[in-house]
Length: 102
Ligand SMILES: [Zn+2]
Ligand SMILES: [Zn+2]
Image 1 (cartoon, rainbow, N blue to C red):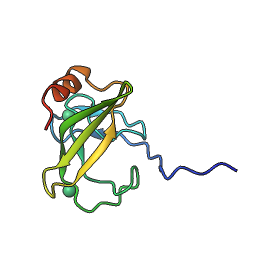
Image 2: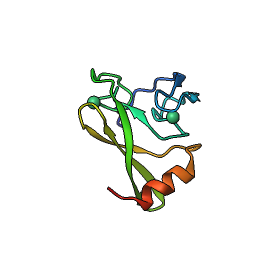
Image 3: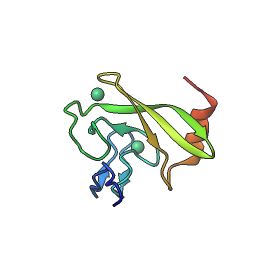
Image 4: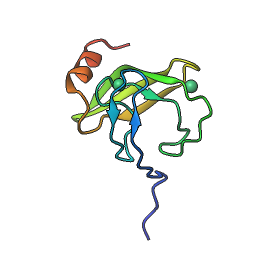
């Protein structure tokens, strides 16, 4: 018996509300690969249960063991959330964030 991850996979394309880029959904990322902004839509990853729907600004990056984790903060309610960087994210943006820790 293996445990079932809580992650609910939802594949959806979206248009970034920050920079206007069209983002092809993978079901695993909910942030824009170009500007790294996200949206406050999840309580648990993928569940789309949050009622806030504020834009979430990338405010920092953690690197541990070569894995980049983007720290997002909601501009509406200040909720903070960590999202693993995805393949295809703009690496220059990630490096800029890690140069300017908040
Ligand atoms: Zn964007
Ligand atoms: Zn929010």
